[in-house]
Length: 228
Image (cartoon, rainbow, N blue to C red; front, side, top):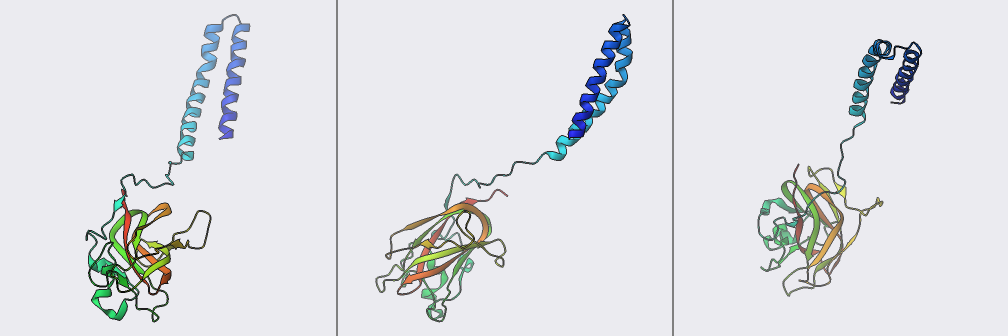
């Protein structure tokens, strides 16, 4: 780029010299026109080169913040997410009443939550496959809804993926370790967790790290469709 600018100034300097010479010969119009004709060609070449440089250095603007102005529930509570798309590392006794599908927000049928297998699964997780890439902004969680036990998740981590194989942890800006989000303190009160920034994913995985009595929870994911 700097060499093009040097060439440009050289052309301008030549123009000034030719103008001075034309004036000295007393016939400024004819002499100057003849002298400047080849310089016009040089200026055209310079203009083309400058346009080419502009193309090379142009970088499209990339948004760092995903737009999700109309964020809303992505389908856990209302059933848009099918049962088969909600899976977990385990569930208590492999019984249907404790299966991952029971993790839908406000589930009230017996057990009224997903319930992990317990001591045989020390690192439980539950995940959702949205079926396509979505933008995720936050999460709403509840504990186990029936009156039998005081069970809820008190702390958890979150990871996301586009293929269900490679996972990325949700963490705070500038932090490498996954963020541990505070969870619930009773059965039914909503706790809304807003993520440090929205992200795109097909799969969302919740990884409970602490819980009351037993690892049990219900939840809804908040976000919107991706425009990609």
